[in-house]
Each structure stands twice: as C-alpha cells, then as structure tokens.
Amino acid sequence: MSSGVETGRITTDIPARLDRLPWARWHWLVVIGLGTVWILDGLEVTIVGSMSAALQEEKTGLGLSSFDVGLAGAVYVAGACVGALFFGQLTDRFGRKKLFLLTLAVYTVATVLTAFSMNPMWYFFCRFLTGAGIGGEYAAINSAIDELIPARYRGRVDVAINGSFWVGAAAGSLLTIPLLDPTVINPEWGWRLAFGLGAILAVGILVVRRNVPESPRWLFIHGREEESERIVSEIEGTVREETGRDLPSVSDTLTIRQRKSIGIGLIARTVFTLYPKRTILCFSLFVGQAFLYNAFFFTYGDTLGTFMGVEQVGWYIAVFAASNFLGALMLSPLFDSLGRVKMIAGTYILSGVLLGFTGFILGDLNAVTLTMMGAIIFFFASAGASAAYLTASEVFPMETRALCIAFFYAIGTAVGGISGPLLFGALIENASASKDITQIALGYFIGAALMVAGGVAEVVLGVKAEGQSLESIAQPLTAEESDHASGSPRPATTTA
Image (tube, rainbow, N blue to C red; front, side):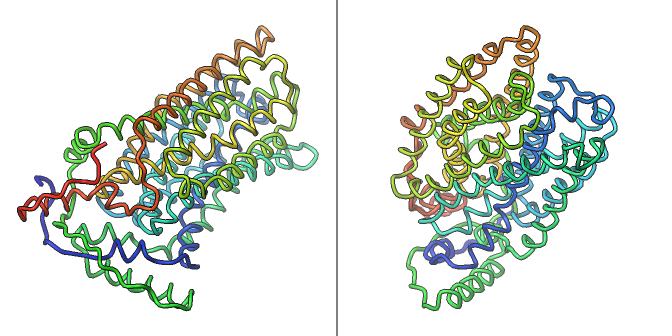
C-alpha cells in the first residue's frame, strides 16, 4: 500500500469477539448515544416544512416565497453533501468518536444561529451549516454503529435507527402546532423557539454520546491495538455483568498491516475498480430515496397549505411521520431474516409503484386522502431508504467505510435531494398560479421511476450481507495486502 505509514503487522480476533456478543444494555447505550442523530435531522426538516407559512410572512417571518422555501431545503441538503464529504474523510482518518462529537457541535451552533435569522440570506447560510453538521453525522455515526453492533443484529438496528428520523419528524410537526398558534405565542418568536429547542435536544445527546467508545476496529487498523484490546475487554466485561452469562470463545482471526492513515486515492480506486457493481448499486439506491424524500417531504407542508387550505399542517405531518417510523421499525427484523436483497428490492419497487399511482389521482385527493396515500407509500419507502445507508456502510472495506457513506450520500443527495426541492418548489409556484395541483404530479412520476430503478438495481446487484461479519462482506484493504505479502493471497468474499 502506497499511502500511510506502516506501524506493524498484527493478527487479531477483535471483530469475531464483537460479533459474538449477545444483545445487552450496553448496546442500547450505543443506539441511544449515536442513533438519535436522525431524530435531530427529522426535527430540522419537519420544522422547516411545517413553518413554511410562518417563514413567508413579511412582518413576523422572513418574507420567503414558495420557491425560497424549496431553495432553503436545497441549501440544507447541499450543506449536508459538503459536510458528509468533508467530515467523512476526517472520520476515516482521525476516528469515529472525535468526529461524531465535532459534527454534533457544528449542528448545535448552526441551529442556534438559525433562531436568530434576520433576513433570508442569513437563514440560508445557517441552513447550509446545519446541513453540514448533519451530513458529517451520517458518515461518522453509521460507521461507528456498524462496527460496534453484532453482525446478526446489524440489519434491524441500522434500519430502525435510520427510521428514527421520523420520531424527530413527528415531534417537530407537533411542536410547531403551539409554537405557530398566535393565541399561544407571538408569531415573531414561535418559529425561532422551534430551532432553539432543537439545539437543546442536541446538547442532551452530546452528554450521552461522550460515553460511547471509539470503534475498536478503527483503532487496531490504525496502530492502536492496545487501546482496542482494552475497549473490547471492557465491553465484554460489561456484557457479562448485564447478561449474567459467560461469553463463548472465538477462533476466527484477521491479519492486517496497520497504517496511520489511508490515502484517498487508494479509497477511490477501491470503490471504483474493486467493487464497481456495488458502487452502481449504492448510487441507484441513494438517488432514488433522496429524490423521493426530499422532493415530497420538503414541500409537503407547502402543498397542504397552498392547495388544500390547511392552516396547521403539523397534525398531518405527524401522521405521515408516524407511518414512516412504524414501517422502518416493524419491517427492520426482516432485513436480517428474509435478507437484504428481497427486502430492499421489495420496498423500493412497491413504494415507487404506489407513488406513481398517487400522481395519477392527485387531482382527486384532499388533505386527508393525500396524507393517507403518503402514509402507505412511505411505510415501505422508509425501510428501504434506511437500508440504503446500511448497504453503503457494510459492503465496502472498513478503511473506506465513512468516506463511502459520505460519497454516496453526497452524490445521491446532490442528484435527488437538491434537484427535488428545487423542482417541487417551482412546480408548486407554477401550479399555484394556475390553481392546478395536478402540475405537481410530474415530480411524483420522476420519484416513482427512480425508486423502481433502485429496486431493480438491488435485484441485479444486491449483496447478501445478512448475518455476515463486516470483514467477510468486504475484506479490509490492509488484510488483503497482508495476505499478498505473505505469499498466500486471499480474495475478498465477492468483488460485486
């Protein structure tokens, strides 16, 4: 390997020891400390969607137009893309823990600054910074979770955690009901307080997160095997105490050449040359879910208010959000039992077909029936979309994990997440002028086609990763070189 400084060659059983652990309260600490970031993201997106009318007011808001509301969504997503790429490579280089503390701090500061917005430009800038913090979180958190959770639970945990976005979405939508009620609070301050409350939640998460350890897998590859061994021994002791039973011994080991850092050039070559099919797969999954969600959800509140006369959209968004979370929670065990390929392909194709059907009947829907259709569609789509992050996290080598998540999130979201809100914002503005809601259907049809395409890609290119260790799904780059150096090359499980 040409990048990084070699610090030694070791044989370790740490991955096998982590994967053989039974579920214990310690794992809930990881879930709560790390997984709650999606609640923050859901809170952010929903607050903006629910407050679109308040932000459009000249006197008490910021005087935003419908296009500006869509633009704010696009700016937030653009910040998330930049943040994911910037913090993603730092996560692979400096460790998971340093970055998931830093990115949460960026989010918190940016959210507080948003509450003090005095004009649209300040608001857009703060939305960009907030998105950057959230984007960085995706890379750092998904990496850490997958490297700490046992293999047999990884699918359901990842899907359910990513689905917790909708807990924040429901909370955000309900929170805006009293905050935007002029009889309860001054309209000039209600939307500002909503952003401030998001920052308070972030501080609480930061307190819990400080107790989550660095990834032992990252540590032993980067020449810190003693610290890695200490952390795993402490985890094993805690799990023994919590479960009241001894842990079985392990025999599987991994030999690697340790490196202080892994060059981005090597990472790029790995993604595009060793795993080209997996690259195409992840791109397809991320583009489909990003367009579907960002296009529909960023402008859902504006659609209800503009065309259906809904003044308090929070109740409708809460129902929609609850369906999303229940879908991810209830379907998540099937990703470990039925398998990744069947579940990802099924949820993507079904939700795409249902969205296309909704586009055809859009002119006949009202606020209640549109919400009902959205709830049915996204019950399935939420589980599939969550599995896109799971796929990017587990099908590439450990040294590249955070940056691969960031790369596919950024590229997929740039295509679907920035264009989606901009397109829907323009469609709503044009449809509002002609008072014809069916003009929005074009966005539904595009989203439906992209979701179906993502499902087909999963059928053709999907990886059966359920129950397998991360190292068997995609062998570490350092392990491959170690084996070649010893004269006994051992290829990765698959090069798909």
